[in-house]
Amino acid sequence: MHLREALRIGENEVVAFVGGGGKTTAMFRLAEELTQAGKRVITTTTTRIFAAQTSLAPRHLVCESAEAFDPEAVTAALETQPHVLITGPVDSEAGKAFGVDPALVAQFARLPGVVAVLVEADGSRMRPFKAPAEHEPVIPPETTLVVPVVGVDALNQPLTDARVHRVELVRALTGAAEGALVTPELVARVLTHPQGGLKNIPDGARVISLVNKVEGDDELTLAREVATHLLRHLDFAAVAIGAVRRADAEPVREVRARIVGIVLAAGRSTRMGQIKQTLPWGQGGTIIGQVIRRLQETDLDEIVVVTGAAHDQVGAALAAAHIRLAFNPDFESSEMAASLQVGLRQVPAQCMAALVALGDQPQIEPGVVNAMIQRWRETLAPVVAPTYREQRGNPTLFDRSIWPQVFALPASANPREIVQAAGRVEGVRVETNSILRDVDTPEDYARERPA
Image 1 (tube, rainbow, N blue to C red):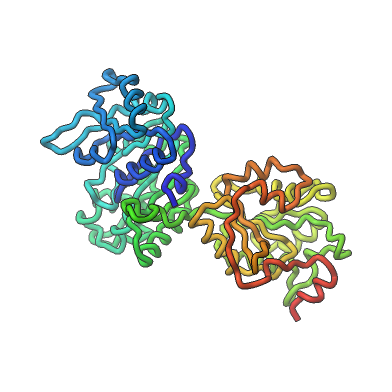
Image 2: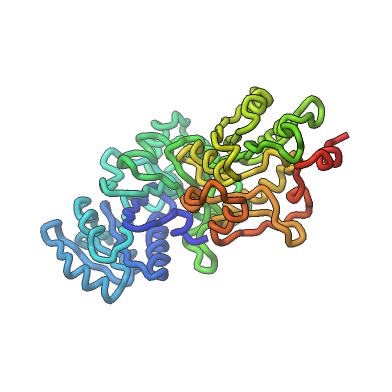
């Protein structure tokens, strides 16, 4: 996956990279991806970078001061080269290129055709993990996205200067003992601290962390642990995991983010002849209860159940299930699109995808759901759906990017129209026909109900 996809880079972005473990490399990798996509981008720093790193940009301009900024010169440079690096003066003896006045970033962002300004906003002296000093990070107020970076090579290593920049500040923020191991939990405590990874973040800026230098499976496991801890904090929208320096592969292996389950249970059960959601299933359970129990065995972060004809009965059946109920008042005259829209309106802003399940599919398998979630993490596809022998079934996962298209559908739309509105569908082949089975009729119930 490209870094620009993992970070969900849109138009008019100001992206600030903070932390340690590959900020500069990540910044230039993102710039390269954007220019390859036909975009214009400016990279810069508000602190300093190594003078040798200026050669990583195809064009480097020096701006001595805010007063010396020449927008016409930068615009002309962008006409010939869509990626321009702008720094302050270069000290050749010290081997440093100094940062620009942060007030200039707003002017950079307003230049014609510039889709993104990428800013290295603090330093780490080449360490993979750090805590910020009093004077940093220097994040411009116009920043739309902050990317706290950490190198996975800091993990399971002693908390010493060899791997950590400003060890004493890390200890102060976490209470860690001298020489303690750098664990995923310790990293997350620093990154989620208001004087750590969340320091100086402008209001309204989103936060997506990057766990970098992840090459092997052991490193991937550690990175996932970091992500799990980070996503317990609502300030973090997502965590990208990968290795931005690799030239032989895409830089992001997967993105971890919160995913909600939406269970559609608003139907009138006309074919069944009675309310089917609360029919007995298993030992003292119900059909809808079984669906919820199966979904709670998956990687979903929370569950919303959309009710309609049987609101009170379904609510009573799920009273102890720790889920959220949403009522579709138009259940008699609408189709599944309307119920899905009701469910999506109940989803917290921090959720990045929704897995839509049917309230009459008690055979739903946690393994299938988790396989779909993992495929989404690896692709961020707009739609992920399971297939069995070339037949597409349920549930279906929708990335947040295409929710506006779902909301634009008429209330009378059926599930096929929902998927068609999303465009590309990422299929996940499964070896079970449970994705094709539901309980619509008395015959279905008699056949499917466990003995």
